[in-house]
Image 1 (cartoon, rainbow, N blue to C red):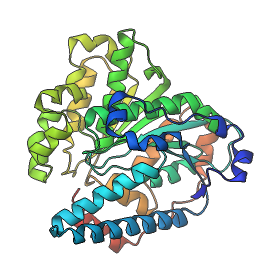
Image 2 (image 1 turned 180 degrees about the vertical axis):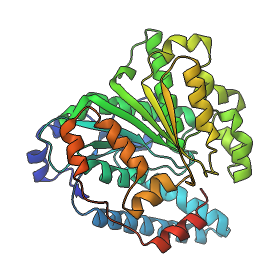
Image 3 (image 1 turned 180 degrees about the horizontal axis):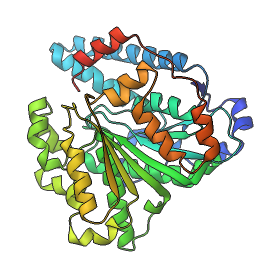
Length: 389
């Protein structure tokens, strides 16, 4: 992907109205209190990507990450900390540095926008601790090649914020997409919300809480009716059922409960529990079509997490379906398969759903060349073996 300079002269030619679009308005009180020094970042417009040299952008990001991590590691070494603390501290410093200087949202645009394009608002995972919008760059590249705009929404990670802050950040990002995407060539009537892993949980919470607000007649900056569908990939939707599982996987109970604002708050951030509340009955009717994807061999978040949520949604009158992929792990669907090239069942399903009523787009998809392999198979197998997810 070729990154457009936010201040470049060519931007005004490609996107004549982009400079007038306001920044994402992260203005909730918790955000101001906890991250007041980051107020400068709020004035930064989205970072824009168009089709071009994807490898160059990834290489640039990798070089920046390496430099920041190395400098952080050296700094912590001078403090005499143990290796574990140096590694963990370096990750936190790197994450905080990007949060300080980076825009709150990245837009991946098709090479040519001759008509309003469908939009995917994407929320990446990262165990609520290491999530970063750039993890969605591969998805952005692939979908933008099929004339779909992708908005990768960033959010605070723990310990900079807890789950309430994350949900609020994502909701603000969705609001920005709904209210300004037309200025970038997007179709505000064809917006799809998607989340992966922890991002699937956060996005589903934002969607459900927005539906509850609307059902109560509260003032909102975006509407669930603007979402054509919700795609949840490898997510967890019933937190009380996952506490012990995460603890056994290394996300210890004390840390997880701190992220989720205490054990008493778990039901409040569990969409599966929220939709069963009688007071949410009207809100459930406002939810869009929900499609959950999960690998049957996922050990990070069990596939039953998606299965029971779909069963619960259908039981309360919502429209939901589950697509399971045999033999696929937590990262296969989102990382290894796209990097492998060739046929990608998850990607094909999403594109086919988005383009279902667009015969011209479907015909163009059918003529698209096979996806290129981006990483040798031996490295993908090694990554699958060593990945903590």
